[in-house]
Image 1 (cartoon, rainbow, N blue to C red):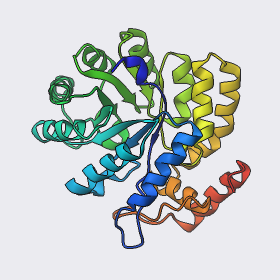
Image 2 (cartoon, one colour):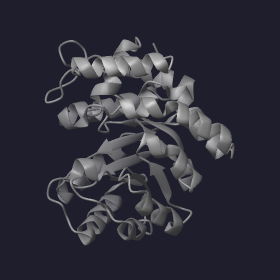
Image 3 (cartoon, rainbow, N blue to C red):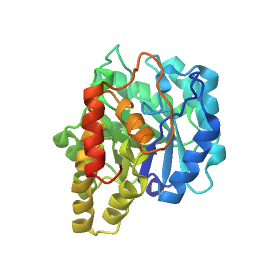
Image 4 (cartoon, rainbow, N blue to C red):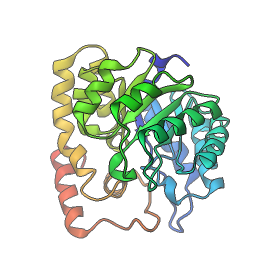
Length: 294
């Protein structure tokens, strides 16, 4: 796949659940179709927002396969996560064979490898994948940061197509954007940083807010891609309160609550995630009313 295709408005899609906690595959297919109609370019299945941490092996693969089967225009990225490189290689190999266009690989969590460990880990995963691998750096969840120089080393590895950067460290992100080859896609992992990152050369966003407002998120990205920076900035600023509200509790609690309030029917959560606190629910409703969602 050409690196240019690793670009655009990418939703980290929620996984809808039925009342009994099982995956609602019918509703998942409907959401994919809705996203395509709203301008979403990529659908990431089984990311953090999709509650992949609480899925068993068969559910994980079936969710990804369902998204692949439902997508007619959007490209599909499959999420993977492992802090054991051997297990990670097996998962990446399996997910890359499900018909996806790319694989997202979370950085190893809990055991906090060195920078050389990150490099060796992702290099091994790339060799196991039959599609481009996207490195996912999210220190707030994993407990470790992939530094800019390590990401730039990884950018030269065959099979690694890009990075989802969610460190929130603009200095680090700028170093990556300045030093990465054109073949390497830097993608925002923070909705609130989409505009500034794209202004500096990022290719798009893997978004939480797009679950709720896919057209508006896609509009920001597509305006930026066309160089309409003033229009993109104004729309991005309108969305900032919504972006912030999506993280008043752990993701995906707020976004699923917001979607249910808006009539998008995605069900509840799996433990250890729980329903949003009443006070935060009221705060969320106020933001959604102000944004015209409710």
